[in-house]
Image (cartoon, rainbow, N blue to C red; front, top):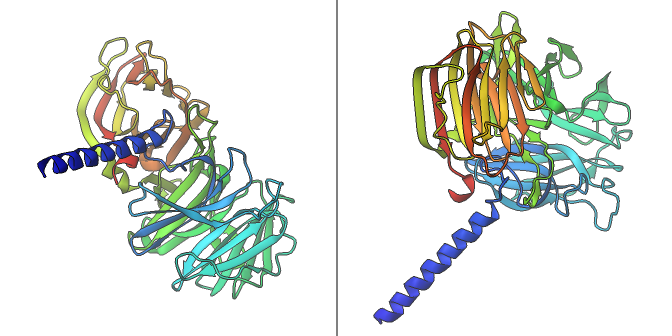
Length: 461
């Protein structure tokens, strides 16, 4: 009997170890994002929508299940309790079978939204028009109805929301044929009438109402599009009153489509963006999303601006932490505070005072030769740069306040509480795992610095 128990225990231990090892290998590729969203395989496109039922988040996104090609998109569906670990489900919308064209009849892009216990979906079936469907039961979609009043919009990107003041559905839709944005309204989401239009150069629009300085009685409409662009507006259900010039909420050149969702339970607006990348070696998937960020409007002397900061869930991945205060860094000396770092995923935040230096910055994933990916601030030029991404940045009181997310193949940098953000992908040398904080031409003062090692989301369910 003891022998039987012994062999059963050994068998159980081995199968569990094998299972863990297999799972680790599956999501442990050299450039696999360890806390950013990515699919198991093939091409990830743009995010489509985010919503929450009870305590579960539902993420919808473009996904080519066949290969790395743009197009042939279906709508993927994943769920999560914490915005970190995602369970993948069957696609909710599929391109018609036996279609050889990568775009024709594909559910290109649209909106998923909840209203009165019902989940609605509008999407453009490329070349056919805009359709509406809905569900109240486990995302089994009911009859798909082609909308009317949208017949000219065959190649477009529709975004739909409920406008409480006018008690109408509003559709902001970008027409790729004419580089034009249209505003339509509808009482039932099926029959639409055009109420306004304007020329525009960016697609994948989104629109949501945000409070200013968290005051419920003062709001602005945030209108945002692909490539990290936004403007602030007033909106009465028919026309937009522009209240700001076109600005950037992300200066990363790899940033594509963005979605914004109001999480009522947490009373926060969450933004997630597409982060395009070249095909990484040894990775069976392509593409990732930025880490969810919380969006807030603040009024400054120069006007109202959008700020973003990493969602608080990043703290769930914190492991070992290093901290420093009031440390001077001199050029040319071996006083690199980050010399102990050797991992590939970190959450770093702090404040650095520029005393009299010409340049300062970080080198991410470098070797002993100090060659890696550089984050550099040039004092005279007032220029912050990462790879080919740049921000004109004038520091207040010579203080560089920052938050930095580093993953295996992406970097997200938040400056001044998220007033300026750069999100980018990168391909570090897999044999280089060092980090540097440096200064050139003078000293800097590290007023405070926190470095949090991040564990992988894949192995912590």
